[in-house]
Each structure stands twice: as C-alpha cells, then as structure tokens.
Image (cartoon, rainbow, N blue to C red; front, side):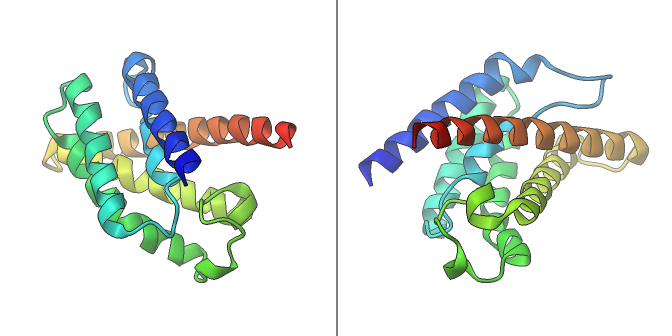
Length: 173
C-alpha cells in the first residue's frame, strides 16, 4: 500500500514538472498542445473511491493552474475528467473484476481497450479544456482543430511514456 502511494506521489510530481517545464512550451503549428499530466488520472486504480479520485484530480489541475497561470481551467477540466474516468472505462471494459490489476494498463485491459480508453480520456480532457478556455463557439473550425490535434499529440505522448515505463518494469522482473 505504502509503495503504491509513493509511486503515485512520484508520478504526480514528475508529470507536473514535465508539463510545466517541457510540455507547456510546445505548441505544434499553433494548434497542438500536449497535456500529458492527465496520465496521473489515467493511472489511478479503478478500485479507488470516487471522492479520492476527484480530490486528486482537482489538486492536479490546481497545481498545473498555479504554475501555468490558467486561472482554474485545468482544475475544472481535471475534476470533470476524474468524474468521467470510471464511466469511460466501463464503456470499453464492462467488468472490472476481470482486470488482472486494479490499475489500467496494456496488461490489465488489453491493447485495444487500453488505447481506446487513453484516446477517449485525452479527447474528453482536450475538449473540456479548450471549451472552457474559449467559452464560446466563435470560431468552431479553429476550436475543432485545436481539440483534435491536441488530443492526438497528447495520446501519442502518453502512449510513449506508458510504453517506456512498462518496459522498465518488465525488465526488472
């Protein structure tokens, strides 16, 4: 239990630092912004109580808001994402008791289900964040391009990070 908590604290700190120091300064073609800190919310155990998930999600968003000067947009989007995480997972994997581990991963969900889960969460978060940022549909094409490109970039980077971390764990075994 203590080892799992320590791993999530380290993951939380590393993802916040990576987002603030590296990924906040990347904007491909003026549209795509990687929002990879949501990896922390993706990796929370499915068995975790919803109150804890919402609290961790809110604190993660608030931490990013403080360092990115985004005035609560990430806190709101992360809190909503924390609320929607379990229903999205149930959409693709209806029986939680069939998972090999309580933490969503390639191994516990299978490759296709995990990829759908990560892409759906990325798309939901990017849509929430950019809708909150614009608060209108003034330029819907630009908004759609930002959501689609940021979701795709976030998805690719999260899968890359996940594959690097799982390979390290598998080599240790």
